[in-house]
Amino acid sequence: MALVIFESVNSHTARITLNDPTNLNAMGEAMADEFSALVEKLSQSTTKPRAIVITGAGRAFSAGGNLDMLEKKIELSPEENKRRMLKFYYSFLGIFKLNVPLIAAVNGHAIGAGLCVACACDVRLAAEGAKFGVTFTKLGLHPGMGGTCFIPRVVGHAVAAELMLSGRVIEASEAHKLGLVSQVLSPSDLLREAQKVADDIAACGPQATQQLVESLRVGQAELEEYLQREASCQSENYRSPEFKEGVRAAIEKRSANFKS
Image 1 (tube, one colour):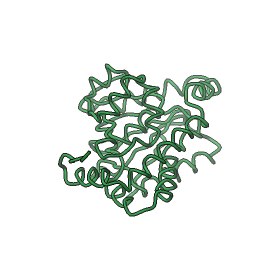
Image 2: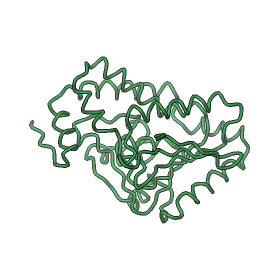
Image 3: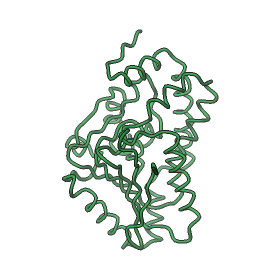
Image 4: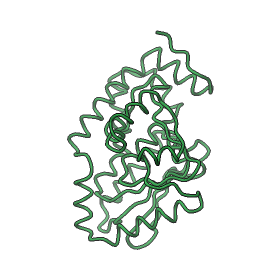
């Protein structure tokens, strides 16, 4: 089964679907490899979409990093973990090099790295019932996937700090109030409205749109600094008793017992 599905919706727009609904589209290395391969294929194409909708299959956008993958990192050295985390980040964030407007159609829970990818998109729409959380610290883990870069740019420093430090999960209505998403729609209307946004964008001047995307987004050099910092912090976390307890608690669906 393909973990990442690409569809050309029409001559100017496309859709990417994270496709592991049984695991709530949790991001593992296999999904990362497929996503990276898709981006590379699109980058080499002579005709790129003018807008791309990203969504999830089933009842989640993405529940974040695959917990089994994360738990195995306990066994690796900090140097190896940092290398792997940077590769993992860029497998998804490499889509930036296409310079194509990205619309996140958040069909369900967007948690951890899943929310970070949604916030890396240029536009976010949510379905009623979707939930959002930057829950890394609940695992005893520093945020990754560019979260410390993207989320403050979307909702401002004060709101981002509260969400990231507390790991609080919020409903779609609060996400809309905070400016995390621009619209909240019924699940049946979400993809249709996301496609309308994509079509509206695709109808605009391609050169001007590409320039504007580059103007609105964080610069590559600045993003690299954030990702290096996140990978360094996470590589330390993976060897700590705190993370070992946090990820085990998440797998066992219980509250973590962090000792000071």
